[in-house]
Length: 305
Length: 236
Image 1 (cartoon, chains in turn orange, brown):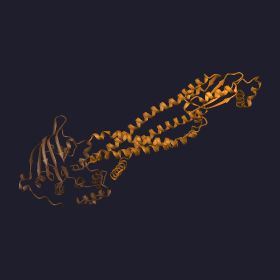
Image 2 (image 1 turned 135 degrees about the vertical axis):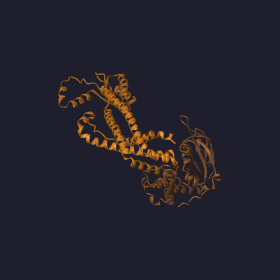
Image 3 (image 1 turned 120 degrees about the vertical axis):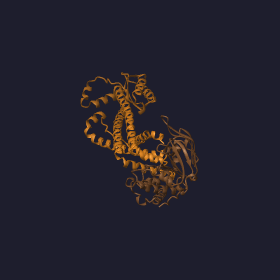
Image 4 (image 1 turned 180 degrees about the vertical axis):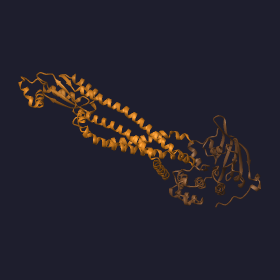
């Protein structure tokens, strides 16, 4: 940037600040409406983020269990062959073999004080099984279903279980939230852009004389527009900071009030606030919206001489 | 400095602002543009600084064909032209100093040079004590002097003045005209639109007379009676 451009930028900044000081109400109106929109959008992002955390957590626990044919049980060679086959399948992260005795022992542990009911068993009814853990990229409902079908076709496998009802239900819910959120987000962006364009236009009307005079004394289109772009960017930055601050405040206030509901929805996971990338994203969205609104409202300015 | 060839300005509804105007104005000339209200004086000036496009004909200002200039090139042309308006067109929220400095700010002058030039121009026009005042706090004559300072601070080769004394009392009008005459004496080409006969009598310059959008008379100083040819007052 040469000294002439630097002077121009400084002059535009001064002009933008002067514009804000000349029309503080319009600035406040614009910032508050943008902040309200960004707050809604941020709330949606926060909900989706926490739902995704839940899915990730359950995903970590998600596994396919392949029960082997009951009876005398497979020999070590058959177990090794099946293990090797399952490990070679795409999307499989780890494979663990549990023999009949191991399964019974685990059941006894799970039953705890009521494990006595197992004492009456004449022989162990539980089949040996393989627990197959999935790689994160294969935890979608469709991928698990395909993998389960592949595993169930293996020789010696009697039945395959993978908690299909829960996974499918939660995936559907998450998909719905994401789509609904995308639609809501697009709608909000449109509304926000219109609001910003409207308020910048108000500022533009309030400064029509100034713009006209600047034009008459030889101001270029950029000289006239730059203060409005900077003002839009500033509005967006202030609105985003306000929205993030408010959201954080509401998050902290809401945690104790909604504790039980959140515990039901999220299980043992503690609700998490945004990290730096999400805060930066909201900030960028705010600034982009501010500049976008200014660009929209200044389109017609080019046509005037 | 200025050439107009068969220029026509027609508005919707077959209303003519100008009809078939062809004139040539030399560098350093002082020209009065006169005629009754609605004759087309303001339209002609607006065409010269690119505020409007002619519907027909060609306009060349300082070697540029204004009728073919793109919107993006208009600002560059305007930086070569100082314009004074009857209603001053000052920025009410800005100080006298800022109103004058804006021309230099747009031209991209460094802050220090901007300050020095704006201050010097305002002092020359007797406004050195009014730098921080808002235009509203000034008299009509002072406001017009600020407008003149804004138009001249960039040393433009061409000065256009649209009824610069229209809102002022006779004494102030002469003061303003003396400032403009002083700019002319320094080499600026000047076009003043006026229908004030006192100014025309006092300053024996070329007169272009418009009527209903047509050029009806182009009177050079030699043809102006000697009794009208007075030497303008020196700048006080």
